[in-house]
Length: 131
Image (tube, rainbow, N blue to C red; front, side):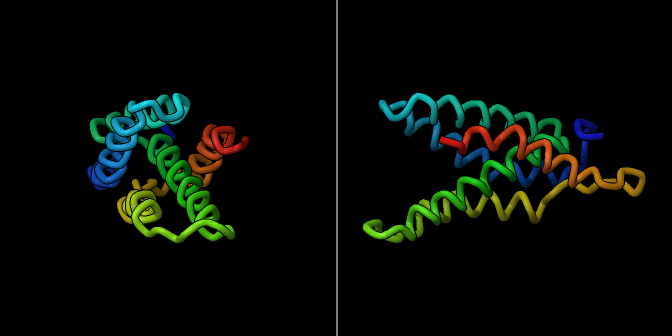
């Protein structure tokens, strides 16, 4: 149910995420945090798999990661002493919106599949955001 191949619409959802993760991985190779490079590279591989063989779980992992990253970036920008810069927020928000708009469709016999996929993705992704 969660790893069954989905339609072509969810392939389009991964394209903006693929671009953002490729940029993040390449820019991170200049000596940034090694954890960030590994995380972005792993998510880049998930994006590539989503473009070739879209699944509900892969889509949910990408959606949750981009949603958590967007929320973290916005909360950081709103703290005192930080300036609000739109490019970093938009860089994360555009793929999250694309993932929502071009989400895979669950069939009638798959009731609750979307909720289960998102909950499983939260369990997978949440430890990355706990410091």
